[in-house]
Image 1 (tube, one colour):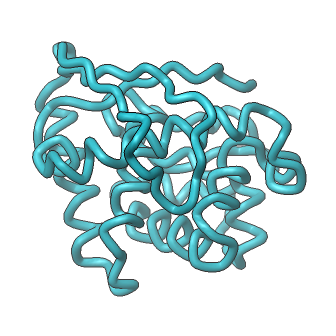
Image 2: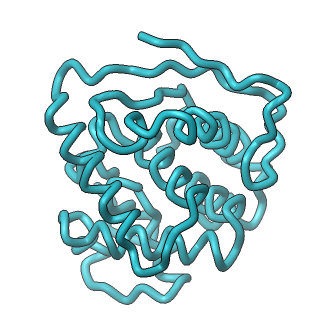
Length: 193
């Protein structure tokens, strides 16, 4: 287990000012390493071949979100028990209300995005959110739904943004961690129901 801490002198990405740098660890997936590698490679291919031509920073944000939201970056891990606007879909656990606000009109609360073929569409909407509202507002909505988007002081949105920002330098400096190995960054952020 390798520990990594963002140095206070490093600039946080996308203008996020981390009040508190969260402790993080790089965790090797001992339970399903092949699944982690396969899923990470699939996400990396989608990010690199995407027609939106994602920037390096956008790719790292999406990878960090996938690592934060899942254990193995697998579609079976999405938090989609609800069938309402608060349903989450894909390995990114994107809020259906956010998708709807961005123009997504898929059926069954985005169920199609929970299949491997839906990953490209999920990435499209995450990228559209960042480019429409800024990465910061995307993460606010991602963490706290419409409430977090409207008032980012609520629902731990700053803590979530700090976690994603803290992952960015490590993902930038370690391409294997971002794209193909069986490790992920783990930062404890309180889970919201």
